[in-house]
Length: 420
Ligand SMILES: Cc1ncc(COP(=O)(O)O)c(C=O)c1O
Image (tube, rainbow, N blue to C red; front, side, top):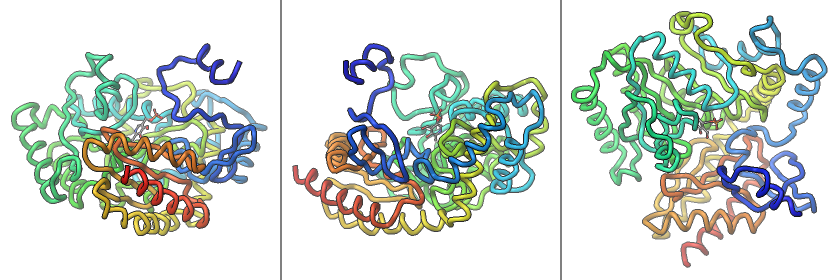
């Protein structure tokens, strides 16, 4: 029996397989099949492996922690692996915050929802169209990137309101118009649907991930923060995909100068191990009564050790600067494709890079390009509400040669696909 057949027999088909490949191991920015074929991985387990596969410092940190202890429930007693990492993360978020660890992005979003409802005593949550916040029922109620994620599970959490995200290409307007349109929608929502003093939380991705690597216009996040503060509403940024240095700053919200009440983290946070967290302003964090939330595995010491080692590599090897440089290189090399009618946009911030196809055929071109790239030995993922976007999320320490070659291959493959 092949491994595909064994999967078919034993694994639920609910989560589709992106390729038909089997992998035996990964090293650096490459994955390898059991027969030795090498694939350049520009998807990094969906923005998880920020410093590539099996970075020696991450492996050493895991090995050292494993020899001390594996799981130790974070409520049993104090442990340095957890607090060492918490302190390091809080240094990045800024003074005056406290942390709660979980295991996955969706779980961190749940924690943010519960914290906001607990401390404000209000029910309402405002989220954005095209967003992805996870698949557990609370987080899913905020997620709005595909009807198939939501519809089968209705009714979802009540008092969740969605407004448009200022995504110029999605709304077919320029960035200024997108900003005004969304501002009007939110203002009108608070006048006609839910009073501001009934809203606990506004949640957004500072760059939409699954929605297509959409960067909102300058001024949007500061405007939202002013609105939230004026009305006693908490503002949470979901940095699960955009965080941990990927955009050239530790967190994407830091490009806009805001100071959110809650920062939601996951994916790369655990250095390849399952880990998530929320950081909340101290006054909010301290109001969350002991026992009103909790977790068995959250803050697992091995995950914390792997995450801390990864954070140290990102900082000591200047990988945020590298993300900026390589992101600029990607835009430079891919922008000439804008001359093709089929290519609607090339955009990015650091190493969140997107190439968006135009029109109804865009949803067919991106999967085709993804497949053609796979045949060229490069793993990519699509994104966007109609899978019309190719997204690049390589490890931040990818070498110049591998990345340069992948960009040239992508440009050639896109040209060929666009010509039919
Ligand atoms: C922005 C964002 N939030 C939350 C999640 C959910 O994370 P997880 O799959 O770890 O539950 C994701 C996953 O893709 C995400 O991109």
